[in-house]
Image (cartoon, rainbow, N blue to C red; front, side, top):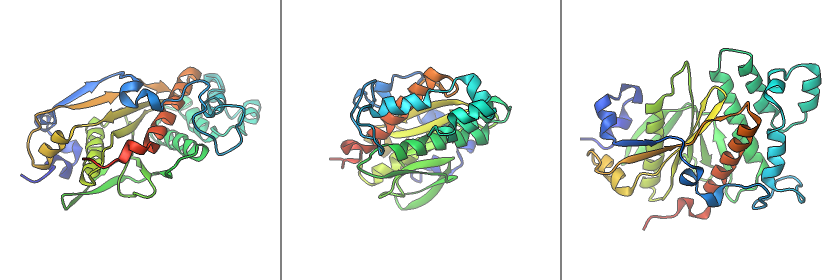
Length: 280
């Protein structure tokens, strides 16, 4: 049996039996400690990182949260009214607010959802100091090579380390016409782990998912034995645990602040020294 047989077929073509063979266990509304670890989550008053602009008297998270959580849902919906537009024209998160406004005034979400999540991540990456440069790429397929065999998996984009352009750290997934593309998300998570495994690196796998104005983070970290079984075309003995965060509605001020906390925690984790450590 060829290695990683499922990844050489579109996830849309996976049968229920093939999906069952992956032995998935889904943890909904998982805690952020389970997904990211408490050490990486910014807290109110956290001064763990410095901004790329002057913020000597205010913590990074508090400064960003002050701007990101400022508009109410009604203000977002009426963003293009003269008074509201004037108030927020200098807000650094305006590129996120624009697609949110579009979704609040329309029944079509896919393009606006994609624009919102990419703008959100790109602004964060520009505003925090990282030891290793990270960037988002709006590609439509994740290309990979595992055990000498090449393939690709569809996605809306990836987050990667600039020094490792063929080793995705995070995938972006966006619901279209009510389709959560769950099989695709599983394939994206497995691909990230497979590429890291081939490089003999220890790394969690992440998918940032947008469903209209709602953001969710999913993490998977299958053990080496699980990947060994898949690489040999065997049914794993161990289970694949998927940890789904709760949904964060970016149109709600309080939930928007929590979404910022999650994304900053993710970036901190990706920048941590132990993220890509060599396996023993």
